[in-house]
Image 1 (cartoon, rainbow, N blue to C red):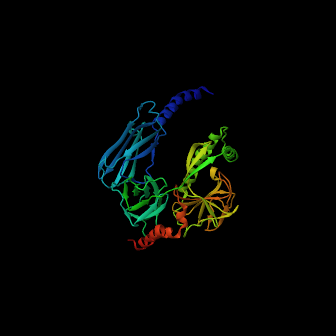
Image 2: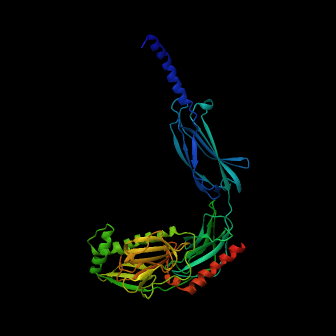
Image 3: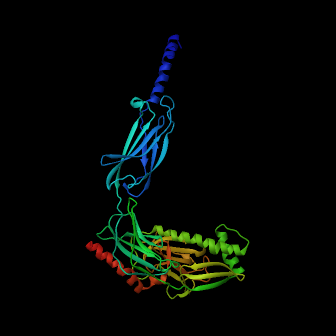
Length: 455
């Protein structure tokens, strides 16, 4: 390399370094922001999370305000310490949770904007940094939705089911019936009126006659309305059984069940409790969790089928006391009806629906669960074989399996259960055409009348 080229390189190198330095200081990429305000409605205090990112020298300031009718109300301001001359702040991302309370901010019902102003430590704009301004449209809504209950005279047994028909004053993402604080979601009833709804609900076997039953609705802004409607809960008496447990039963039936779930225990009483109490509870959670998979379609029609020519072996909500070596070791409630016919009897689908579960499940053995729509499910357990797959559509009286002794069954039989959303209810009601007509169908007819007329 000649002396001239060396000389030029010496002259240019500082300029190259200076150019790189200035480019880094004068970077022009503005900060970016995303938010989780999926629906634009605000009313009751709600949290909104901003995720802010920066690719240059770091964030300098974040300023958030709400603008309505020409008035700007500050909401949040954050400053990040740093050096404009040298390193900036070095903060390239920041998550900012905000709480917007329409009443606290004195906002009026109507349109508004959430304005987000973000600056970085760039030398651009005469050392003020790149400025990113984002305006998020919002709708302020402080009025609670109104509920008009159209169905009348709801009489529900302990452990029984019901349906209510109601109309909302506005579209709500969450609405339904609360029974003692337990929520049963509602669904669009169909027809010409989009605000007409229906909700199937249940009163659990252990809920008292004075349990509060309320219609409930929450709009997109978080405003909630709850109101009572005529619902009388009838008391029911449930049977009580005392069952003596032997070592042989625990060894033959419970030890294999526990081992199949990966458990191991030498103490037979602990084996019994691990299966009869702990596994039962886990299996219950699995089955009731299926309630979230329901579809807003009424697939069933008429009374539900009972296993043909079957004798009752146990009833819904039988209260069972378990004794081992003369001492009471557990108490459980039987949440179905046990029906016994001949060995390996064909099991019919109780009504039209869609299979949402077809597999083994602990103490229930081989089991099938069918969704009949709008939160109504049927359960078939202890099957010797399963004849359907998850996702299959079935018609009333289709064979879905055969009775058996899988799980914790004693003798060949079918454990049949009915669920409303996530609550087991008395299947006897759903076998009874008179009960269905008086308590369900007469109310659903209101849907047809109200939806067609819009009244």
